[in-house]
Image 1 (cartoon, rainbow over the protein chains, first blue to last red):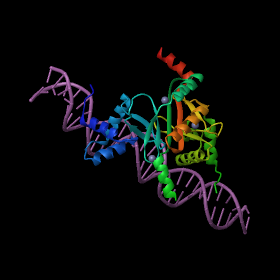
Image 2: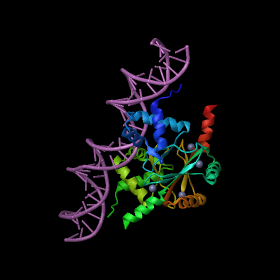
Image 3: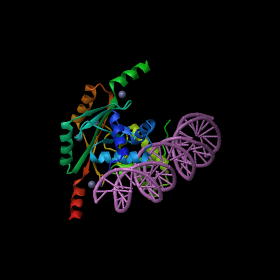
Image 4: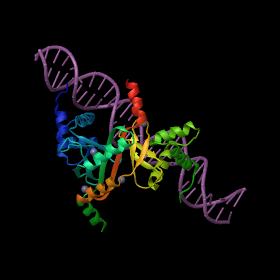
Length: 134
Length: 134
DNA sequence: GCCTTGCTGATAATGATTGTCAAAACCATT
DNA sequence: AATGGTTTTGACAATCATTATCAGCAAGGC
Ligand SMILES: [Zn+2]
Ligand SMILES: [Zn+2]
Ligand SMILES: [Zn+2]
Ligand SMILES: [Zn+2]
């Protein structure tokens, strides 16, 4: 049976407190900075559990790191992510869903899954970059 | 100036000989099995170069490993990949291109890039899986 | 409160990738 | 073809994220 521990709650809470996608390491650091003595391995385990149950979304950063986020819905959706500050916008794209399904079927593929993420610079970071370049 | 070495050619050749996406480690093993004494670090460097120049496509496997492939075109495109045997189909999706651009612009994002990959089981692997399950 | 058993955390282990740097290979020039 | 400045290579160490271990702790049913 699955038990309830304060550690699991702490990780869930830390995820909720973060707006963008964060790594397990970053979340562990954040928890430590608030005085929590939670272990790193436990953070990894909790995040993996949350991802399995659908309570957290996960994706691979372009650098190959696993990032997690507590999204507002557990329905299938995608993300628009600022590569500078991590600001994340949840996006739905029925057109992309059907396209992915169709392209797989047309090529004889089954059990299709897809990875669709958009990375860019948010308006604030764009302005900041322009200012510092001046 | 960039020099031409047999190592670079060997990596390019090994990539061409492989139909699907392969990891640097796998490519190094493949080269070794043919008797090539090329070093692992060199394979990593060559692949990084090929990716920068656009001669190779790269993506992150769902497990976070960097995979490379020599595609038939250096134009922007995406991939449908068999997660069992690695069979890869190059796919174009103008609809997805415009969608990605639009969704970024509508949210004030600039310098947008996107990651779009479809993973599944190819027809052959699907049949094989069905047979072994019987 | 007791007991069973899942959970935690310090630490070691793993595995991919990158850094180091002396030796070897390129290549324009002589 | 030999020379020399520069780049590239490769063996190895170093990093870094993630996972495995495993003894001790604690959640929850009794
Ligand atoms: Zn931003
Ligand atoms: Zn989708
Ligand atoms: Zn296949
Ligand atoms: Zn595209």
